[in-house]
Length: 303
Image 1: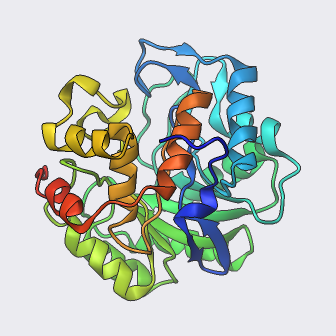
Image 2 (image 1 turned 30 degrees about the horizontal axis):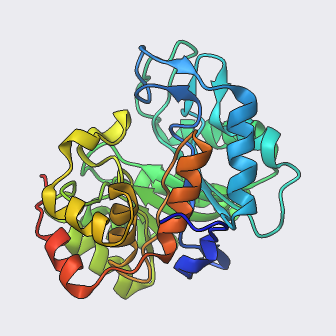
């Protein structure tokens, strides 16, 4: 199901603080390279093609882009591609980024950022994107440890005007409560998809809905493939049956299921392929029946 002119607005909208976004967005993790993200066995995507994908996304109504300074491969940086493709930015475009992890010039992972290092990571994202502030910054967690020092450091940058809104990535329930006691949280970005979600994911999803916080799944399409992307050979028969019934791809059904988990759920599928981009945006108009949603939800979860 790929209409001639898919429109990201078909999925509806949500508020990230005072910022309105269409619920189908775009994730930049896989924009920079062929092969698995962050692996050494990869080559850079064609720069002009990546730029064209970003510009086409915006033409299709995408106004929420998820990125990070640590999304890069040899010769390509997601932030710099976004800057080249979309600057000067329109007022309605919301760019969300993440801090916490860091990578050296060769792609090796560095120690998780200490509170005093988060300022440098925020400045790095601002510099690469060519902006004077960041719309939304998610603090990426590395386990269920206390986060008050790290989140407090970002809250100070918010007070200074370098950050407009704050969110969390890979969060645990206690961390959400801890962060909200320091500053408003507009989104929680966790691993979540058909057959790919933590045991506490449904509770976190419901909590976010009750608090008016956006829930933003990652790996909604890739599922167990994670950084490597979706594996078509591993698709479940129930999912394939539902996809055939809607003349849709399994990836589109995964996105539709994700969006139907609640009006506060946003999707950020990523790709460097123009055709995949159009199919992803078109999935925002796909409506599953209650029975189909239950069948897909029953496909299980991972811990």
